[in-house]
Image (cartoon, rainbow, N blue to C red; front, side):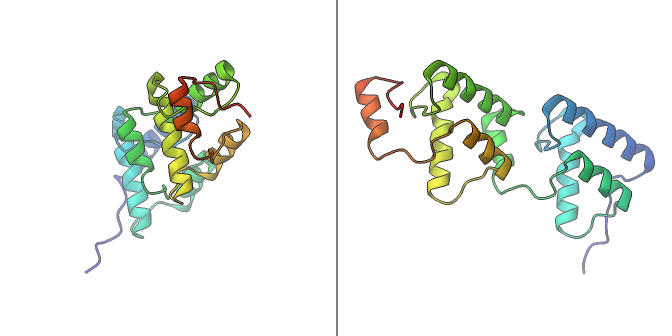
Length: 177
């Protein structure tokens, strides 16, 4: 038997409170993609539950409530692995942090070709993981984030052996075009 439709404690007071929390989260973080483990007000759990109920067809929000979420930029379906990536990184605002680090790397080195063994905050491992996911067809970034990387001049494919050559040479800035 299919469980009855549910609403995550959907009364008017709770809705207003949650909606206000999402607005504040967006003001602080630039989006409403609240990680599941975001602890403040258990907002992450609430957002995760909304997505789950929506995915299973059991969400009972009014059309107005759905519209309000859409207007905030609510993402109803998160790509597989995105929440896990944020938890592994231990950073609730991982994308912004990584993008800022990449911008700083480019300012310091003239490109975004971060060597895998670049130690500062494991930026090199993060860049390598993105390239690997791209190469294997398992990229877990939204189209908007891919576009942001493209605008930074991100190099998606590095010639074979270049990374190893840079490590042997000990030169972290040897990938300039």
